[in-house]
Structure formats: C-alpha cells, structure tokens
Image (cartoon, rainbow, N blue to C red; front, side, top):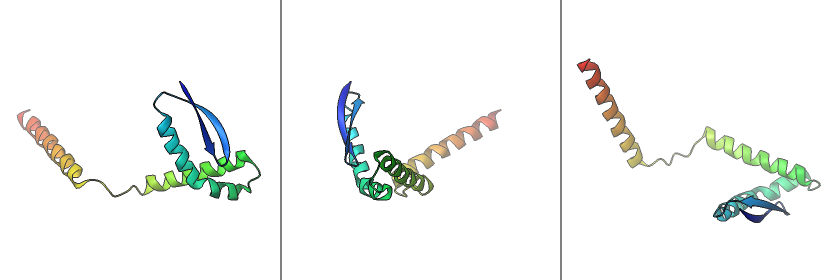
Amino acid sequence: MAEITLTVAGRSYNVAAREGDESHLRHLEALLAKHADTAQRASGGLSAEKTLLYLALILADLLDEAEKNPPSGVSPVLLDRIADRLEAVAAALEEDSASA
C-alpha cells in the first residue's frame, strides 16, 4: 500500500492508495483543483469542512447533469455492432419459436 499526499483547496491530505493508483489519484486531484476556487469562495474560505462540502456539491451537480444528459459521442461503429447483435438475437429467437 502506497501513501500519497493530495492537495485539495489549499490543504494537504495523506491518502493510502494501492500500488499503481497514484497517477489516477493525481488525475482526480487535478479535477478537484478545477473547482476548488469556486468552492472556497462559496464557503467564505473560513472552514475547510464547508469548502469540501461545496466542492462535493459542485461535483455532484456535474455528475447529475452528466447522468441526465450523457454525451452523444457514441461511436457509429459501436452502434452498428450492437444493432447487428440484436438482429442476430432476434433471428435466433424467431427460429426457436418457429421450431417449437
């Protein structure tokens, strides 16, 4: 188990991480940093706990929006493959019901 220090909204936190997860945690730290200033301003900068709450609310709002409006960047090739598989399943089901 590795230990990594992450800085969120100007405060440092030691976090235990599985070996190899350090770069992923650094990526998450960078995502938090994008919104940390907004969270600090919203909390008045007086309390780390309140800043983290506002940061969590900002991220939850982004997640909620992404779940409601997923990106439309689905690959047409992937959609074609899915359609082909669904057609094959439908044909197999029709065959089974015809032979029964």
